[in-house]
Amino acid sequence: MRKRNDWIPLARYTLIFSAFALMMVIVFGNKGLIERKVLLRNKQAVVREIRKAKVENEVLRAQIDAIRRDPSEVERLAREKFGLGREDEKVFQLVPKKP
Image 1 (tube, helix red, strand yellow):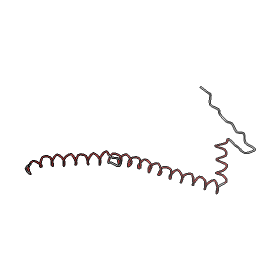
Image 2 (cartoon, one colour):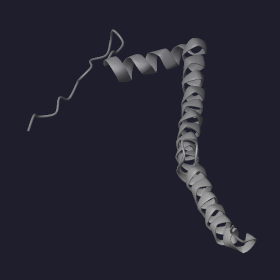
Image 3 (cartoon, helix red, strand yellow):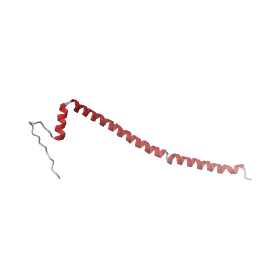
Image 4 (cartoon, one colour):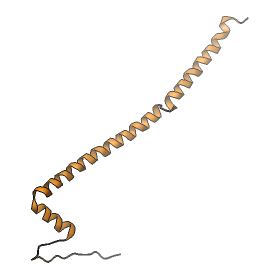
């Protein structure tokens, strides 16, 4: 029969191995720390994109308001985007040379 002291080294090695295996699962497992860090980084990128989109939406809403309320804004946009002018004006468009 074995003595009680013979089991201590085996128990110690089992405990160390179990702790090591648990740490590996926590760090590298399916929902481990590395995956969490990657997801956090992705979340931060998405949050930045959302903030940027909100700012852009506010700018666009202000432009829509200006177009709805101010006829001179509609005229300005028509002149800039479509090269339009009044009936008594001549519109010149400069076309860049192709390289």
